[in-house]
Image 1 (cartoon, rainbow, N blue to C red):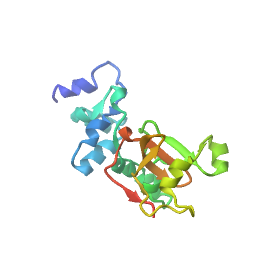
Image 2: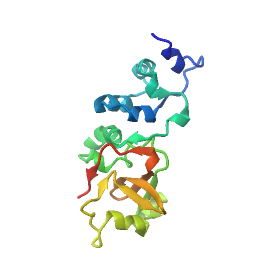
Image 3: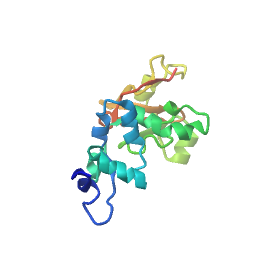
Length: 181
């Protein structure tokens, strides 16, 4: 093993918390390899071996674990969970575990029960008009991964089911989109 191994695991006598270095993972040109790094169980014995072999994609510095996180990796993260319910992974990125590492998620809903039960915020009209038409159907060009403008800032749409979930653009790499219509 090279000296890179010691840079990750042997920093302290106890195994430190390992994080994904999302900036480097997002830059991997091979999607399958990128997904492998994104989906790896880094807390398992095998995962620790892989983090030692590929230290550029993992870190003990939590500040490097903020993104951008590829949407395609988020979809792959939820694929198994959602398949158990016969759902579509692209439509459930945030409500399942796909967006677990995404910082700055903002959740909205129009459902008053959801607002009360989950302490959510009412969907702002500014966002609603970008996703839905006047009849309440998705706009023909609405899609997961679309840019949403809200309060003069850009966000990425990650979910649009019972909840509308957006994230700041700097936290998400839009390498994949999914139409809502």
